[in-house]
Length: 315
Image 1 (cartoon, rainbow, N blue to C red):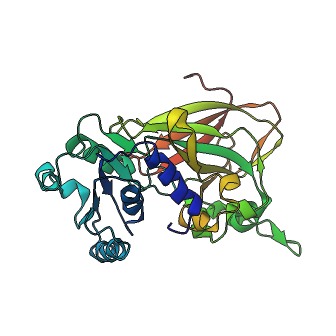
Image 2 (image 1 turned 90 degrees about the vertical axis):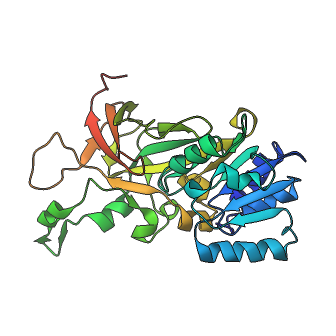
Image 3 (image 1 turned 45 degrees about the vertical axis):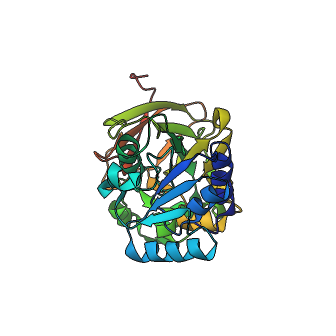
């Protein structure tokens, strides 16, 4: 992610608005230490970077010293959940800013809220800031015959292969990088507006805020076949969330590192209202009302979609 230059700029811009000469910054999941260096370069008086991986922690320590910040940035090689307030006190009191970038292909795919909420509750000082403070998971109904060409089959030279589709997995979320391609390079059409299915306030929310499931009413903006639901996210910072970092295909089109690190999630869709020995394509008409059901795992790390016909009665 170090080569995702807009990502680095997002964090620098967010931190520039918050850091003062009195700031004590705590970074969890520090990795290379780059974000901690950015914080120190903006004038924070003290930065503590927590990294659980011993090898990464050692590399981060070398990078920090090589860039002249060894006296202001301190590495703790532990899980953030194992660090105590007393351990941080030796570096100058309670942190005034909590910094992290532990986002996955799904917004909470690397348990970001688990670690941020724990550090916020136990380690951050009263009134401390969180970066990034907010984020949202989005879902988009897409038609893509490129996707269909690698996930289903019809026939070849008059030989019907249709029943092979009975093995098609329409329940699992698969990441585009697992398929081995960039979704932004595939031909696709959005059949309904991109919609938020989960909003997270990293500065206040606790684990479990997602509940069991949610239902969202969508209106198809054009006719077509919903081959998949695409999952992507946004995180925000700054006044009125003016700063935004996203993984939508139009946001990653010119950003190869972001696509390879995060990319998007895809879940194939079938029309469950029709019985059959194999998945039935979900064909929609322009203007048709649909309900997108989003089910969250107990830990919130993954999710599952189901598409139904008609508007949701729960909205």
